[in-house]
Image (cartoon, rainbow, N blue to C red; front, side, top):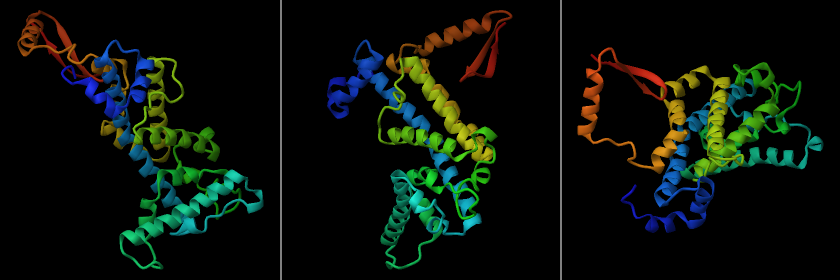
Length: 295
């Protein structure tokens, strides 16, 4: 980082984008400024696997239960509230479903050189539609009480079997998923995700990132304990915890500040080993990984 020509990089990032970092983080120099910028990139990258697991789990959980209840092409005939009772925004949600499915079929047929009237496999359609398609399904337009042809509330328990009773309702799920969608879209479009919610300062921004990690993890947990175990064992959550920290931000702002020459590191390690009755615990992300016993 210290050998990079920052002035040459700036036009390719844009002064307006870098000013966002300068105004919020108040870096002491260009090195710290670009460290903050790189931190933002690493934060977004750390969230990608968790967001991907959420999206895949959500679409498969809904498709599995809707298919079982309504048939393989459930999205073609899912029941909505009566047209006369739909608000303008709810009309748009219903139209969004129809448009998404029609566009998916058209694109699949075009990509596979299929006839315009050929039947498209349901699994291809499910894989083609976007994350916005799934969050759109949580609109009140698809909430029709006592109607077996509607998604909600009939499928809330099957789709979210592990959700606490007080959270297992369509409106709650919609609010949480829309917040995650906003976060996801900013991350996928290379926008700063640390400034969602107008944080008061750096520590507040970090706290909000940690809270978002909890929200995404909980949503995965509510659908599938196995999916949650996957992201935990794969290290996706621990990576977010490590990157979304003041220590990691400071590390990128001041590259090389804690580096040690190999000769010095050997001397320090020998000194530790020679100390009688002295134990040094080795930790990673707050978890003990081993220890060195002197004497």
